[in-house]
Image (cartoon, rainbow, N blue to C red):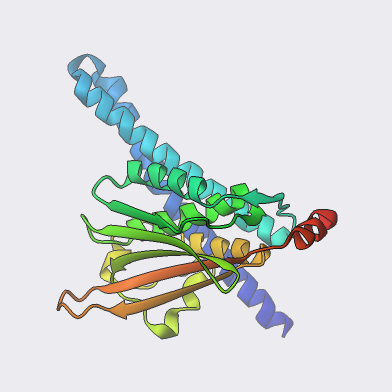
Length: 253
């Protein structure tokens, strides 16, 4: 058993180093390449080219920051010291803010957001809730065909606030529903092969959702239009907490 455990540990470590090295190398190569070009050819480049190159450097820097944040999140989850600060959070504003950030990165993608009227607040860590929504909405845009739409819907079902994020993409087999929430999971299909990803986002998302007493699930349904695409729906739900339940959670913080 010990030998097996050590082998598994070593394999996990090697997978981690391999994945992270690959993910770090791509944006770093871009940043270095465009910086070197600008330094070597500053006088020959027009203002538009300079702005374009700086924009690429900024985008790739943001990608690096996002990867490092995800890595830190995984480390904190593993150490069990991912401290949550609970407060009453209105779902509308963080989702709209997330959409505006992701929209900036995926300009060929559309977003529709519908929120039921008089939807109650949820009792969660606001920053972690925003991280959950960022991971789900960015994931949706990343693995969708160009010029498609992500639909986000928030409503109330059975004393839970339920948020769904739906997009079109290459379908997920039912047998892989649980697999995609595990560390380093990447479902092998033509779309995921052309998209960079560490396979950490959904693992972190599931852990954060469940830490805050929520539930996350995914469903994939084949479209009937011969496009070969599926409707993919990620759903997160958080229980509506009474004042007494909120007080108990605050006491335990």
